[in-house]
Length: 303
Image 1 (cartoon, helix red, strand yellow):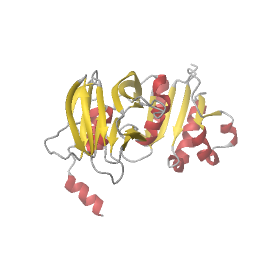
Image 2 (tube, rainbow, N blue to C red):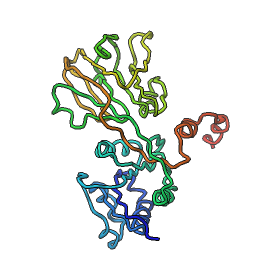
Image 3 (spheres, rainbow, N blue to C red):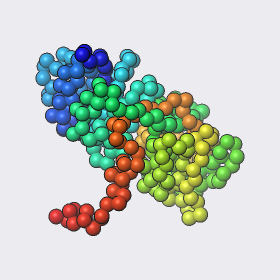
């Protein structure tokens, strides 16, 4: 039986290029399936020495995805995954996150299972999860090249600057003025990222919610809050330095004091490919080591 013809676009990091043996195995696996292979030009240059001449003839380099593709493969950590999403999210193409980094909440397919994952795709043994995306809007649209975030949008003070004041309204109703080092508005997907590190709640991906968590607030009475993702959030920032930073999935932009920011749900969702036995709760147990005996782990680390 002839296998269906599929196409794959591959993104990767320079650090991932160090694992080029695994990457060359992937290329050969896709070639054996008669797949159409696209590799981001930046990444292809980094791994070129590990790919033989014959295989290179079957690879199409790209800088911008202006063609149709069936699947996107991200080789690296969560940073590489978010970069790939930033380039392709609105295309509604399932993305495969292969972990060649450290923790890997988003890129949570082990590199050892990459070939098996490809086989499962051709056998149609996988599921696709849809994840909500948020969008930042501001009057000076030229500043924001890519306003969409899968994880979070953070409003932050600059370097050694004093705390900033962030006045917030939800659906036009004033909530409070945060006096803090910053504020993180997170999707459920991002709730295990920056938001978690500053005391934000973990939210299950299928809940239609957003969390709002202050960074080092001046008042201990200020706590995280969870709201509907249908809400419109309006922010006005005051700063002694007269400017501040906005980080959209880690992509930082300097903004001027007095700029009104609006955050709302994006008009599309990101599709993430998951092996059938790979669930959110399983990922929590494994990545956060819930239920693990830390005494035994401590013994292993000390050896």
